[in-house]
Length: 215
Ligand SMILES: C[S@@+](CC[C@H](N)C(=O)[O-])C[C@H]1O[C@@H](n2cnc3c(N)ncnc32)[C@H](O)[C@@H]1O
Image (cartoon, rainbow, N blue to C red; front, side, top):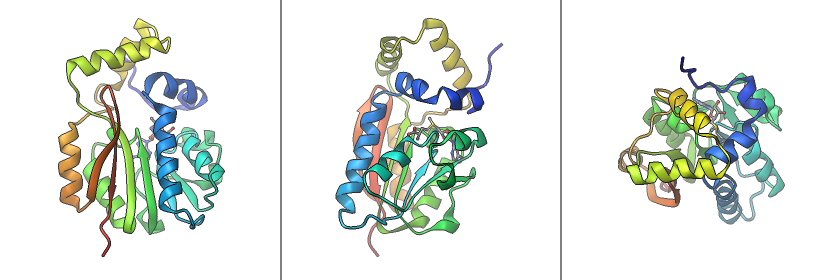
């Protein structure tokens, strides 16, 4: 019987090793987000930054280590929020916290692909951003069979067994829903974002950066 993937206490307890072995360039992408925050807000340590799907708080920690003081997370899973390195900074919610707006920067790495209504979620992010604010996110997207097979090779290279690869792919069916890169580009554009660029890509995973235009 296939077990449907959930972010439960077991996943929370093992999240770091799951992320490192299942997400290509996990630390590199987070590093790129920190680099962007540092270069966008060099004189603004109190820039308001929120990490969507903050999981165990790795990005929040790295933003704080980079000197940012006004850093938040939003998490739909009570288990993940409780396991966060910064539970006091985490808003537990399935919806984007528009009531806490405005934000200078929104980060959403490897989370939107779990949200069926992700266009509405991205629209809320747009509404909540300051004019000129930055939105950076990563998702697993639809790729060619060639990319998909390389992604499975990536997992093998991290020591994931064939049985675990099969079980995880089955558990994610209907939970993580990849869409094409072109869907994201079109949707971001129709919402009103500008400067839409791919800033990292590896085997079905893409990281995009875009901006809410200045008024
Ligand atoms: C793969 S993890 C994200 C990893 C994290 N961004 C990082 O850098 O370590 C996906 C997270 O998104 C959360 N999530 C799923 N749906 C969500 C929603 N609607 N709102 C907020 N968080 C959500 C899950 O509970 C899970 O912790």
